[in-house]
Image 1: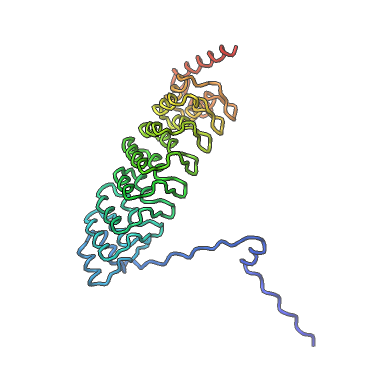
Image 2: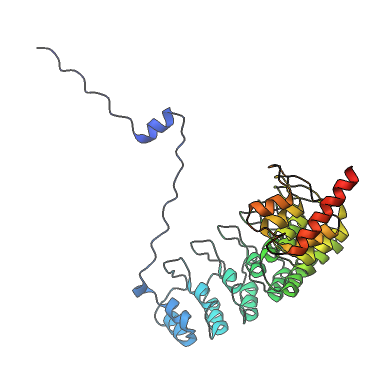
Length: 352
């Protein structure tokens, strides 16, 4: 009787196949621990109500934990700092019972981050947390510190307090934005943004560092029309010819967003960039034409911008404006059409 053939070898596992083909499997982080159900949360509902007496009783007599977490990983302290009333007494009570001011939720945010989302009544809470050991430079999973939050939320006094407590103004988030980038990228009141910029400068913020898009603080100030911030950065000696990763100067960005006052200031301070071309071959005049910003186009032309420069698609600014449907010469501003014609005529006479 012939012996039976040996059993076939077991099929390779998916991991083994990947390894054979040169792929290294990426370890997947385990899911966060499942938080207790809402029915078992004791302190968090009381913190939302600002019920200090209830919190005290639940901890002392009911054995409630100051480290319970909700479905987002928030502790009672996270919730208390955002409560609409009685928040200081509530936060103080939790800290007295050893709540951890550096506990983070599932996005890596500590209670101090959420203080920076308040528009008012933040000072007492911030002081309590910082005096009780809160890590002022704690960063979320996105890399944002409390100073990032305060700057982005346009809170100049809180920015000042955080800087005085030693917050690092040069921490960068995952997009390489420091607090100054977020402050200047925000569309808001120019006076408020200048106050924030002044506080960050006093704390030795780096003013020329680009983010991942290649935007330095000056580029962002130009794009959002923050004329006071542009002036302050100029006074601080910022280089005006620096371009983004796409080759755009502050003048390009001001013209692309219709910031005529900033454009005029830039031309006066750095006339050599009037016709500078970006990575697409576009001049500031092209940028204004692409977005249909008549005021900026007129400012550029009146300051001597060349009208016949062609971009990488062999289009002049006027041709770009027509191709984009703005037709800023004949449809929206007859004056600009006349200016363009006269400029082209004068250019032709000089060349003949």
